[in-house]
Each structure stands twice: as C-alpha cells, then as structure tokens.
Image (cartoon, rainbow, N blue to C red):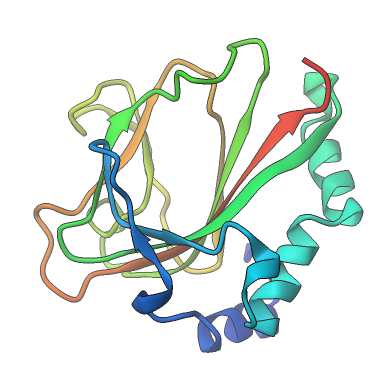
Length: 182
C-alpha cells in the first residue's frame, strides 16, 4: 500500500527541491545529499505542509498506535530530506549513539527511485553483516513507501550505489521517533 495518497505523493514529486537546496554529507559512512532539517527555514509550501503533517499530533497519535507494543509514548525527534545519486552510498552500520533502551525508530519514506532493482538503487536494506552480503530485508519499491525499523536493534542498515548505472537516484524523507521518557 502507498504511504501517502496519490495526490499528496504527486505534489511531493512536483515540488521536490533541486540539488542546490541540499548539502553533501561529510560523514565517512554516508555520501549523499541532505537538507531541509528546519522546516520553517524554507518557502516551499508543499514541503512545509508535509513536514507540518509529519510533526502533527495526529501523525504522532498514529505512530504511537503503530508502536503501542513498546508501551512508550513517542514523538517526532527529527525530520529531513535526502537526495542520492550516482556514487552515493550509506555504509552498512548499526546506529550506536542512542541508548539501546530508548527504542528509537527510524522511518525512511521513499518518495521516488528506480524500482527495477531497489537493492541497487538506494533502497536502504537491513543486513546481518556490514558488507551487503547477508540481507534480510530489502524494500521492494522506492515509490511512495516507507521503511520502519528500530535503530537500536543490532543489525546493519545501508545502501550501495557503487555498482549502479548513471542516472540512478533516490529521494526520501527521513524522520525519527524517540520515546518521550527514557
């Protein structure tokens, strides 16, 4: 099923900012462009609507119903856009900065990408190893879908663009939900 309605997804595609609005990540584990982490600092009204929705109490309630098995109350801690293209990568890694008891959840909302082979098109996969050799989950589509995972679990996540043809890309909105009380 689609994450957003067709009209909302189409509006996102039509109003997606160009590469000039993104900054290249300087982290050795990741090479892709990120931006729009402060939603009140830009004029794109369509993106602002999406950000406001993802930060809304209505969406927070939905996420808390989804994560009710955790017996915690969650809030949207961060949000931002990413744009990845030729030679981009995210080295398979385990998020180690969060307290393992915090049960932080990452959400990768795939806006657009090449669906002919998502594993080779920037679809963040979940792995048992840090070499892309033992995947246990690879998204099947990069169009209007979301990957949700507990980033404090001990498995690797990442994507590899090094073997791709030119003109492969992915567009995502990434957000994290933290528990309100640790």
